Structure formats: C-alpha cells, structure tokens
Image (cartoon, rainbow, N blue to C red; front, side, top):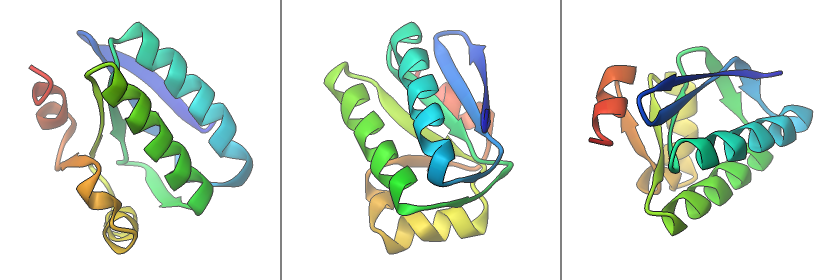
Length: 111
C-alpha cells in the first residue's frame, strides 16, 4: 500500500509514501474514500514523504475533493515537497486545495 492512515480527532491523515503514480492511484483512492466516510469528509494528505504525482493522481485528488465538498468537507495538504507543490502550481490545482506547512496547522484548520 502506498500510504498509511491515522486519525486525529475527526480528521483522517493519509501519509503518502514515495510517488503517487500509476497503479498506486487506485488503492490510494479506495483508501481515501473509506477514510472520508469515516471522518466526516475531513482529510489531510501528509506529503512529507511524497516525492511526485502524475496526471492520474491529480485527477483522483480532484475527484476526492469534489466528493468532500459535497459533504461540506475538504481535502487539504501539508508538508508538500517543493516538487509536489510546483506540480499543483503548474496545473493550477493550488487554487483547489488548501496547503499547510505542517500537519498540526492542517488539522487545526478544520476546527
């Protein structure tokens, strides 16, 4: 599994390991949907160990964000590498997702 899940109150934290690309996108999406339902659609993607994203991952993340927004929740990022942050900027998806420097700030933003 390309990621691990932890909980902080009502917020699910998904830590992505290495790259979120190719065959790893579908298991990640399934795992994220399960977490979303369990956490009231409040999800933080911890990018502290994530090194890259491909177009399939970006598409999946937008889909997850749409689902969360339908339930008045959100997908937020924390601790993104400069590479992943740049990918969001170039694709203009930085406007779609709130990004935080650290996990604590991202979790607190749901309160």
